Length: 409
Length: 93
Image 1 (spheres, rainbow over the protein chains, first blue to last red):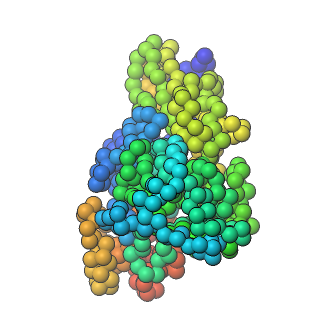
Image 2 (image 1 turned 90 degrees about the vertical axis):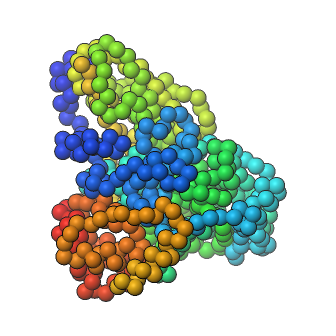
Image 3 (image 1 turned 60 degrees about the vertical axis):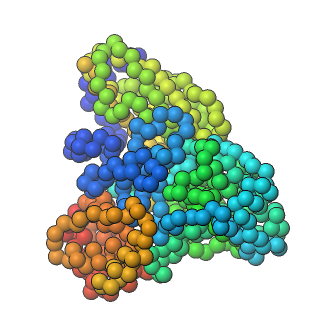
């Protein structure tokens, strides 16, 4: 039940993370943007369609960084034409001839380097399919307080798809992976605008590379990958943030030494020991910081929209999606009183521990007022969304519970 | 300075049909320098959306990162013009 005190307060709940009114006004001009972003985002972001995509929220044009509007998350699977787009470097391959594509497998950690065509990748290796969330490490960076520099992502740099492809471990095995390999280095066909800019190259620890769920995907939701999501193949690293999910994958190198490129040594790092992370990239951990790895448990309310207005006594279904780093969502709770009282939401079908888990909750506001609705997800290893931001300079791992306002007349 | 922009534009725009940029910066001293150098690698909505929360120190740190980490060929005198412009027009943090 909603407490009398909460109702009397009429929406003036003192919440950590509630937003100054000026931002509400800014957000109202562009309702596709969530509240709480920097003013510059409300000035610049627009809805625009890239080739093969529905209109998405354009944060930056070159390289293209476009996020999925909240209104597109209507099921557990994010359609390919709605899936977010994220590039670091402006040199994106234009037209890719799939018949000419070659995946090179080499490095001092394999005994038999090889090259594979796409048809060989499809025919020579068992196909595996997995439903998995792909989330940019910087999703929700834009809500960091204080704001931090970078692409000012809101809620939509995340999506869930069925990925089908060959297992990375099978491809490495074909190349005769040596026992002293420690990391698998991956590169894609995108490139920097200037020679002096470090190419976007990543590595993953051997154990993650040999995991059954780590794939070289050639299909996404039953179709070829959209060009801007990595056509013709991308790496799928379920549970881990999308920085490792290399697009336009053309080179895999097994290395007997830790990779020392910029994008692993300096970028995509979190303060060591600050987050409740269970999987660490051991060969890259430093005293001050370590590579980001698994996603933290999180959720988003996808309906109704912020500021929804309804009548007292009517019922609305609060719907949303929850996910984590691959332990599996065990519970989602809803509060309609600004976080005082929590009740269990009904969970949707279990599509696998790496996938979005839908939730819903019927809410019948008994009387007029402003209601602060919140969702709080927990996972199978006992982790729960954060009440307060764990600040870090790059704005990663923001899983703070977000209040949504419903106005009841 | 102009040569950098032209060369980069030819390379980047070839075939990328979506790269029809129209991102205008505020008028101000140093705007041309910012457009010339920064737009060689990325559209100008990058600095525009990172506003107004960066202080002068914050913008200095961004420009230094572009030079030292990403290899932007910007001389110290031009770097100062860029930081001055960004702080005056997109700073305030």
